[in-house]
Length: 182
Image (cartoon, rainbow, N blue to C red):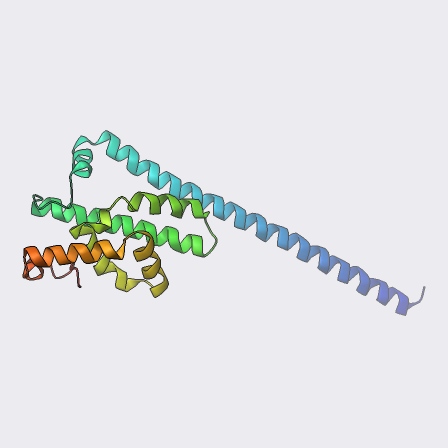
């Protein structure tokens, strides 16, 4: 075997080693992605369980959650709690939606939250105020998705019309940071 043949054999071995290295790296990346996806899914589930646990052990918070937030008998402190809770739900939804969009968590996490949020919190006057304040921070595709999947636009229009009929000057009394704009 001459030097030329040895050089060719070396190039062949180097090419095979490169291909095997790429296959190995591909497998490592796939495994890392699966681990990351599982970790995010676990963290999301843990967050949900922690909220349920806290509400189950905190009687005052459970009573607060059981109130009808669409009624007008909330005091200022309760109103602020509803707004903060609504924002917490929105931030959680933003996080899940983005992670699903990026392929980092399974869609079932988003479906679960969508199902829960369809119960109406963001159709209440306070929920709508929180949404209308925060929606400017999101892309148009998310806003359209949210309003189609969480808020029935017809219900919003009906609520705003009812609020306008009941008190045409209701907006003047609302907080400037959380306001429904029709």
